[in-house]
Image (cartoon, rainbow, N blue to C red; front, side, top):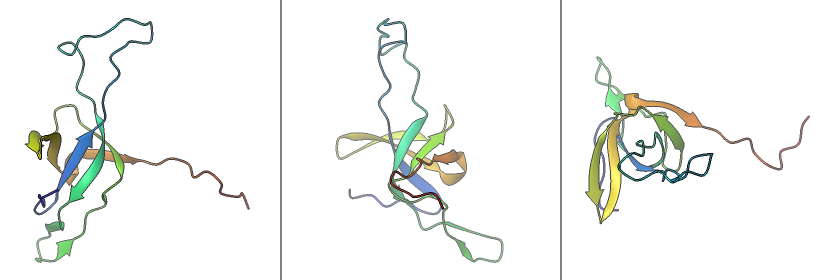
Length: 104
């Protein structure tokens, strides 16, 4: 990708939403809700605090995140639809339990 976000902005690839309801009804694209989950593609260097020190971001490329329904700006980069948003618009990182870890 030929794009580097600035400050505390992140680039997110939204996950495709299922087009079928749990009851088997097919939902048209015009009625489907905007997905609120995605994967971080690129992260800016971070924001500066009041003292001018760089605060590194809490997310990294590859993280699966949840964000608000109306967060960010939709853009097209290299013919791919992506979202650019501030790190503060991200509500949290989805953490999957590691497989193969042994209990102590």
